[in-house]
Image 1: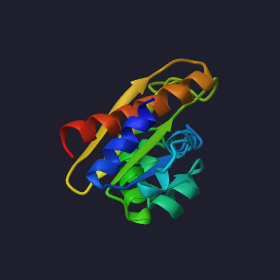
Image 2 (image 1 turned 90 degrees about the vertical axis):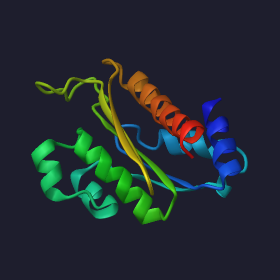
Image 3 (image 1 turned 180 degrees about the vertical axis):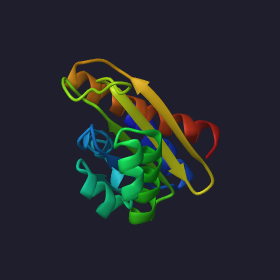
Length: 157
């Protein structure tokens, strides 16, 4: 499983990770902590669903939320930076999206998800549009987030 591979890579490189989750509701943290020994590299996760929680716990700027919306590249990037800062980790990954089946808007369909990775020397954000199935969207977003972390660790770290 990918979470085991991520764990091996983090352990081998002596790196730590934090997670900021919105639409996945803790699923990425759950998958990472299912791996025995994950306490060596997983320092914590913040599930910030509401705007106020994103601001208070992750340091997402109020103006960013209201200008771009919670499901945006800008917010995903600020969530990742905030999780890394709050938990003092080498890497953080953040996920924000519209899980569905309702909640889509013009230009922001159900299934739209932004995932961002923040490290001390790099940052990236990727956009996905999964589908209309809530559980499927959550699972695909978690898988995509873990894939982004793994790919970063294989190439850059």
